[in-house]
Length: 341
Image 1 (cartoon, one colour):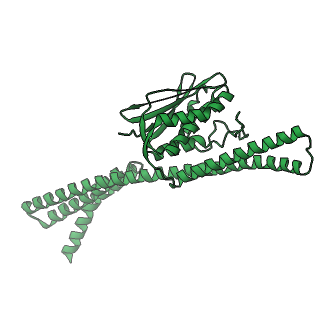
Image 2 (cartoon, one colour):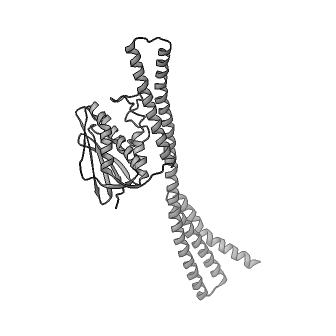
Image 3 (cartoon, helix red, strand yellow):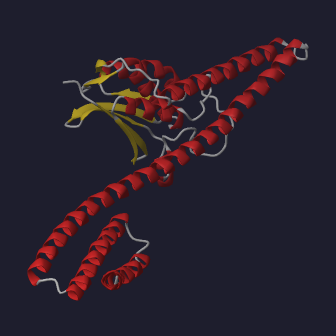
């Protein structure tokens, strides 16, 4: 019994000689990385065991040969354990960073959803109130002269088109965010898509006094779904025309490089503030806080700030990228897509 007590006290003493400073070191480094903490903890465990063995061996007069063998075994086990702890620490650190990024992304998405619901509620409530007032005025006979009646009818049509466009954008965005978008991928001539989109946007550009110029050659063939790519180009053109002043120009160019096919839409908006560039493709971002309904020259509403968010969603669904940079006199949106072989 006396030997057992002696062994216990010697082992405890050897362990505490290493463990106490180790605990202090962990407390001092508590703000450091997970990998460092795991490695230090494993080193404390191995060194504590080694110190306890040395203390007990000295007290029990273990031979030098046996003690040397024991050191080799403990050293090898400690090296392997520390290496495994280093790998595990890096894995845990990476998982923790990924989890934190996911939580941050979820918070951002939740804030974006709340903002979108608030803005869309305003964008729908305002025209609905106007529609109801005009409909009641027409129904009650408050407005009777033909000119005012015709103006009411025109405004009802404009607001109806605007709400229909907003609902369509919301439906498309919900499909993208829910992962319900199904693309029929094929080889698509980007030149044909741009030609059709330019022809459709030409009346809007002419009504705004904006010149719409598209390159005649150099267009690549890309892998994509033609309806979705047409919407991407149409949204970019409408956005560019809306923000380009009269007598300005919107230029559409394209080409192919080692990274794939690309499309660039350059406008004359005067540039985007650097602080707003990262938010351009955010849902419901319009570049200003006012939510007053805008009406374009073609009689359609300016939308709910969802056009560029839809562009990003559709491009990313094609495994492509979209970005925006400021250029001389305006900004340039560049879409990159996988090129057809």
